[in-house]
Structures are given as C-alpha cells and as structure tokens.
Image (cartoon, rainbow, N blue to C red; front, side):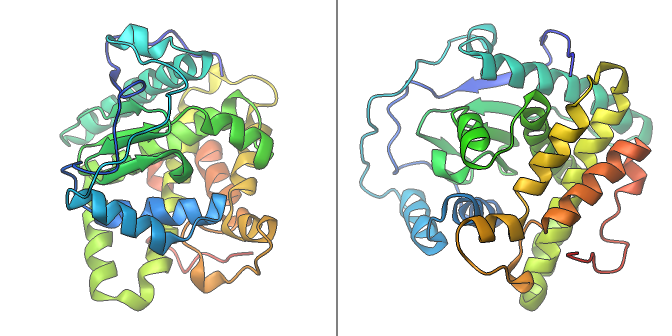
Length: 296
C-alpha cells in the first residue's frame, strides 16, 4: 500500500538494544500470555507449556538471564525508532494509517478511543503481559495496549512461511490493531470471561476473536482502497492462508485437529480478511453473531 509518512499520532516504544532478561517484568500472565505462547507453538513448534512456564517465572521475578548481543540499537525518539530499518518505517506508516482510520469511527460511535503503542524489541523484551520473545511472533498485549514486534519476524514470515510482500506485513500490524479495537470495545474481556466459564469452548471463542481481527484488518485496507497497489490483496490473502492453523500444523509435520485450532483455518482466515476487504464495513465483522465458522 502507498501509505503516507508516519506522524505524531504514532506512539512508539523502542526496546532494541536494551538488556532485558526474562525476569522482573512486573507484568501479568493472562489471556495474552496464553495466546502468544500458542503462536510460538503453531508458527515455530515451541512447546507452549515450556513457554508459559518461562513467562510465569518472569512474572514472579525469576532470576534474569542476559540477552545476547542485540542485532540493532533502538532509537531514543519516535522518529529515530521508526527509521532504524525499512521494516520499522513501514510499521510506523501502517500504525499512523490505522490510527487515522479507526479514531473517527470510534468518535462517530461515541466510544472512547486511545491509540495503541507500537513496541519494537530485538530477541527479548518485556510487556505488560510478561516476557516478549522473538519466537512468539507479533502480539497484542491488552494490559498495556501495546503491539509488540521483533521486525526480524518479517524475514521469517517470508522465508519460512512463504508470506511475502509489503501488504502481507501491513496485514500483520492491522490484525494486531484489530485486537486493540476489540480491547477498546470491551469484547476481549467478555471473551476471556466466557473462556473461563466455558473452558470447553475456549478454543472456539479464540478462533472467533482472531477471525474478527482479520476482518478488521480487511476493513482498514478497504477504507484506504485508493492506496492499494496491484498484487496487494493477493499478498494479504496468501499471508492469511499461510498462517492458518491447519496449514501451520501441516508444515510442522502435525495432523491438523480442528478442535485445537486457536486462530482459524486457512480458509477461515482468508474468508474473513476478504469479508472486511469487500465490505469496508466493520459491522460485517460479527464473527460472534454467526453460526460456528466452518474450518473448510
């Protein structure tokens, strides 16, 4: 997408170059911690139990471990942080566009709006939900309303997952922003409460939450349709396909089990991203008001 240069609407925190260990984060482990652990399992084959254990240890102020030499140094101002590399610049441009797209919608609906912060880190960092590690992939932490990303993930996304292209990367940011929208609407808390009261439905509820974030990403792109270049839509749909639970399981040599899905199948993720792209209307993203989404 041909996005404008980022502006003062972007709230950026840069942890690159900081010597964060795994302990003393002062965060809390909740729904966010579970979700990012599952991302690590689905995308990189990391045992979620082990990941949650390390995150809980961090939350309890466990012994810190030093990070290896950081791959790059973070900036001290938003402008410096956003221009450390091309991926940072691209992410900040996307964040500014997302802010300018969603804020008027909240104001029109009379709902309080607050822009999220974008947090860059390298290898390891800290969030309000506990430790941040590169293997988790990008994630949203509702506790501090932060979108966390190690931009090296974009290379892994292209090389390991086959999800290439600028719009594929912007889709990642827009999806995480979708979780911020859900958090501001109070939907995230409602889903968490339902998951606690109906544990047998926890995964199915997670899938609905993730598919709605996909749809919201599509809505953002549609509302900026004059910025879309040829090939962008296909790039985004391919990314949605490549990060479907069934595709990730197959690529990891595991048999897909729909009951274990937490983000949705490739078909589901493509369907709901396209729903947002085709409609450009956030009201069409009610994944909770529909029948159980088919994994096919």
